[in-house]
Image (cartoon, rainbow, N blue to C red; front, side):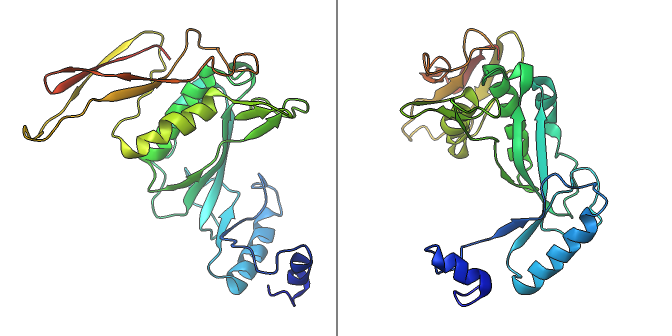
Length: 261
C-alpha cells in the first residue's frame, strides 16, 4: 500500500517508501493436509486476488500427480531424500497435468548419509533431478536449492550450498554444478549425468555443417572426482571442481567418455 496506509507507513518508516516489487505469495509452508489449511488458504487467496490481481498465489499442496481442490497459480514442491530416490525423481513431472498450476520446486536436496557435508554423490543425483526439471520446463516454473548458506560456526542444517565463516567460504559440488555446469548448458545442447560405477562412451553425431563455415573446437565441462563421497572444505575448497577439456573429433563425430559418477 501507499506510505499513508497502515502497513505502508511502517515500511516507509523503515526506509522503503515505495511498495516492494512483490510478484508471488506462498500461503503457508508445508501445511497442506492440515485440517484448516484449505479454508484458510481460500481466505488469503480471495483477499489477495481481489486487492492485487497481478500477484501469483502459490499453494502448499502438491499437484504433480493429482489436481488441486482449490485455485492456485503455482504449487510448492519440496523434496529432501537420498541420492537413489533423487535420481529416480528425474521423471517426477513427466506426467504432471499440463492444464493445472505450474510447479515451484522451492526446496530440493540430497541429505543425511548420502550427502555428508556436501558430497559429489549428492550433486550427481541432484543434477539428474535438475535435468528432469529442465525437460519439463513447460510445467516447472522455478526451482531453488535449499538451504543456500551456512555459517560453519552455527550449522543448523547439513548440507548447504555455500559454507562460510568470517573470512572464507567454499561452494559444495552441488553449488558448483549449478553455477559452472548447468548455467553453461543454457547455451549448449546436452547435459549428461552418469550415475553408474563404470565409464560410459558416447558418440555425438553432427550433421548439416557447411564446409565453408569455420569449425570451432568443442569442449566438455565435467564435475567428477576420484571418490564419490569427496567433498570440498576450507582445507580443500577445490577438491571437487568442474574441469573443462577438449573433445576429440573423428570427422564430423565427437567421442565422449563419461567417468563414473
